[in-house]
Amino acid sequence: MGMTISEKIIAAAANIDHAKAGDIHTVSIDRMMSNDGTTHLTIDMYNSMLKNPAIADKSKLVFIIDHNMPADSPKTAAAHKKIRDFAKTHEIAFYEGKGVCHQIMMEEYVRSGELIFGADSHTCTYGALGAFGTGVGNTDFLYAMVTGRSWVLVPETLLFHLSGSFREGVYPRDLILTIIGDIGAGGASYKTMEFTGSGAHAMSIGHRMALTNMAVEAGAKTGIFEPDEKAVEYLSAHGRQAKHLFKSDKNARYEKEYFYDLGKIEPVVARPDNIDDVVNVESVKDVKIDQAFIGSCNSGRIEDLRIAAEILKGQRIADHVRLLISPASNSVYQKALEEGLMGIFIDAGAMVVNSNCSVCWGSCQGVIGEGEVLISTGTRNFKGRAGHKESKVYLGSAATVAASAMAGKIVRAV
Image (cartoon, rainbow, N blue to C red; front, side):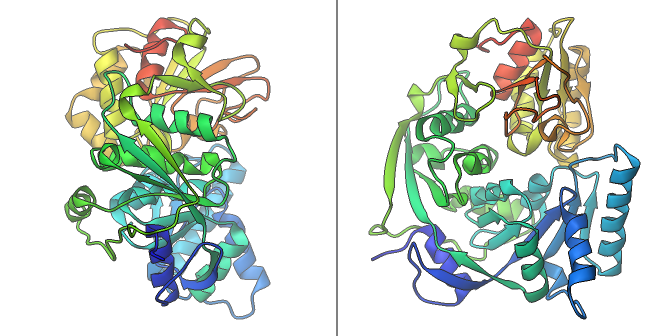
């Protein structure tokens, strides 16, 4: 029996010839990333729970402050200082105020064929380059940090065949929300979501990230694309080469296969308070909004900002609406400046904030109040995600968010 991309990556990390779903293997971790959501807790565990602690390979570690950036309270500032000091003492790669962790990892570190642990659930983003990225908790991260190894239960793989092309006004964000609506929030629990077909290969790396990033919202262990010439070009442009360019074998085993014609996908939103409550934008039109957000590790890339700017150019957002825009990284921010997008946003009445998790994280910039409604390109919409427990969060594409900010209510962009 052949192997899937995920099985091949795990087999390579375990230094064995073959891996299959259901196996448990001890693996070497290629890279580990932790952000300020939990790094301070990992440091406490490292300092208090281990005898003569030592980091296995500091070159594999990356610490990133992005969730509450800049610090929003003395408590947060203390946590940041702890991370900052530890990283300096142990010579760990450290980023603060440079952008969202997954965007930075994709720009600076991820290589096709790697097995990567991240202390953040959206580490599955890295599958856009054909890497096996998965989120882990503090204990698993700490063990990997001090040993360089961990264990992995090889997941089953769900294969998503993508064909055709998106119609005008429809984007990968609409596709992944549609898929999650179809299979459910637990429809891919502890499985790999592998994307293939002509529609998949036509997507840019940024658009692939929109799909792999949200795989965890269907419960997936990771999301992944076959690393093709676009992945190789992306790596080369960022000064890196692939570790492995694995492809799934023709006789690989899949638990289930799904087929999507991109030409049939419609603009959609996920309604409060469930990620899989996905409906056509038209079915919620005229829902009044108080705030709109474009950013996050899912939709804060230059492609998303260009889409929003095209809609907002020469227009103004509704008087009662607050529109926040946070580029996914400083490099994306700089690119948007060079292309004149920032002027378009400011002229439209938007607030452009620094590159960070911002509204998607819901504990610093742009927190919404009781009874308020947010439409967002963020990753989650459960109760209280963006502020008050009685607020409401709708999720949509950058196009839907921009058009809705102008209208003051949820509308379709085209």
